[in-house]
Amino acid sequence: MPRTLDGQITMEKTPSYFVTKEAPARISAMSKDAKLIVVVRDPVTRVISDYTQTLSKRPDIPTFESLTFKNRTTGLIDISWSAIQIGIYAKHLENWLQYFPMNQILFVSGERLITDPAGELGRVQDFLGLKRIITDKHFYFNKTKGFPCLKKAEGSSKPHCLGKTKGRTHPNINPEVVQRLREFYRPFNMKFYQMTGHDFGWD
Image (cartoon, rainbow, N blue to C red; front, side, top):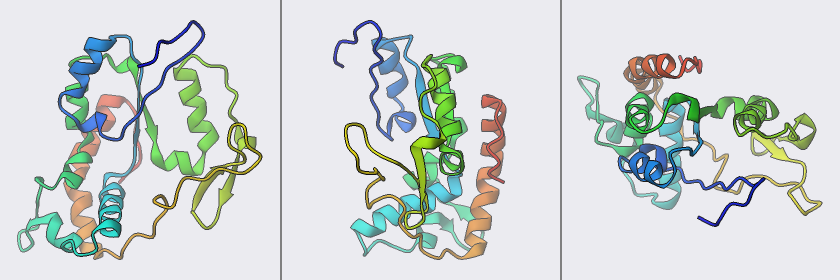
């Protein structure tokens, strides 16, 4: 990490910290005062998105359905598939709470980042003790992408949208498979809502 001067905040990000077993202990050893921000979204949408991403790189992978089920007849979900495991947020959070108190963790709703980016980033600014500078006027909705983009990037007059790997069209998944995944994640979601004190409305 670069040295942080007074009046500065150093940030670092990766999607894999939250789900990596060793990460909480390592980060705690580096700084017990670290503030943690975790962006979460409906785990069913998340697993489909994960599959879509992999499919774009490896078109020969098995079907979504065959990866989802250990046994299609019984409807048993294959929890050895990492894409399924990631969405069991309550399990990952238990690991983090052994090292960090809940008041040092902010959970940001991926859905609200799309419907109300300024509101959700307002929560982030408050959590970090920053003055609220980012507001609605900084965003516009990009119909092609299907989510908000920054009106202009820092130091540029051009608008800034996330790259072409974001906002991909998801494949059509059998509604029964989606329903079974909803049932599978429901108890974990309920536990996660209890732990965080926040209902993300994924059901």
